Image (cartoon, rainbow, N blue to C red):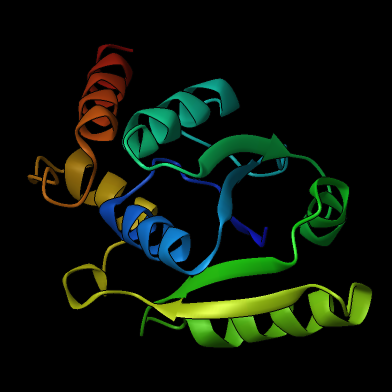
Length: 163
């Protein structure tokens, strides 16, 4: 059984993330969607909220699990027996960063492969950050986010607006 990890902050999960997760599942027997716990980054959603939104988005996809991790991703992969890290690429500067991280991971754990999947054309430009920015200014982001993530984002923005 080949296990792959799709890792990220997922703050919140987007349809682009979901596309990469679905396509990863077509390639690998088991896919673990792992949300990073990095306390140095400011997030709109708590780790528990992000995990819940991911769970809601992947609920109908067999062979996909949701988890969180601390520390280095390659150490987490070793811990759960994953052989592959899957990363999505968009034409918005992702490559340089992902290439550097992929090389570092290869140096730290040569037995773990990094595989890059190109974002689907409909998701080329969207990111969690951009979806949040558009929504903060009243734009419609419903086509960029799974339903539960869209609802949660609108509710969170309403909470923030009420102070």
